[in-house]
Length: 346
Image 1 (cartoon, rainbow, N blue to C red):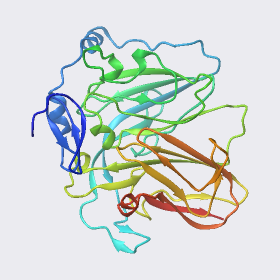
Image 2: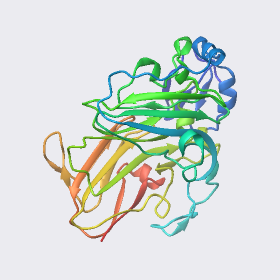
Image 3: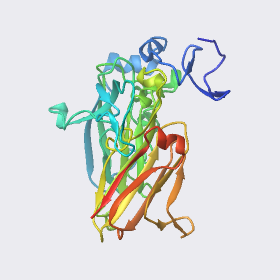
């Protein structure tokens, strides 16, 4: 590895670099040893103090006007097959090469981590709240590297940020293996909408690329809810995360290619909402065949929108067109690497 002077993201001659820690530059298209990277990171002072004195109590930012939503979420390893059928259903051919790797996942549990609520999966569980609610996420790390949960869109204090900040890091920004932390966030007025959460620890973005992300929805209880609501995560599994040389998977919710990506379904007459978020370094254009919706920015009728890294866009309409349809990224190199799925309307 070549030494560099600072941590940065570099595009050089078409190769995208993930610049990690301790002056090491990491290529996205090459396997990366995230555990070795983590060993080069010093434990921040606040984290050392918290381990010696017990975990800090979560605190509120504002007085809660609504209820409390509690989640028990654990970060775990999982053997993950990006193409479980082994085939691209649309093109009717086998996907060549290895498609299974050791991923990271946020897994939801019952109260006090009693029992898992289903299998570990990518993305992580949907975190839901109404305006006025307090959201408490009890988080435990079972991975060999420090990871976190960092939310978008919802309100939180600086110590509930879930981000690594070097020597200024709070305990929630550096959760080591076997440790727990309680995050407290608030769904204040103005936070309504679809958002997401992800790892923002000391070796980010590799744990994120290995699967540590999930959706958030904050609703206004005074407004009608859609009949169907779909959360679509556009992201890549690069070799730096999977260890599979020469294979960049372009994914929808952890899977690639039709017959593997989510099959969404609705009925004519239903109120349908799509929420599309991006968790990689690329811009993606979400397109849904056979449908249009109002652009909230200027009231035009549109049938696609472009979503950048860390962005979320939504589409909502009354379903009126039955059939089997594609949804996909309209960047064709992404579509050809698997970022496409089925939408069936009866």
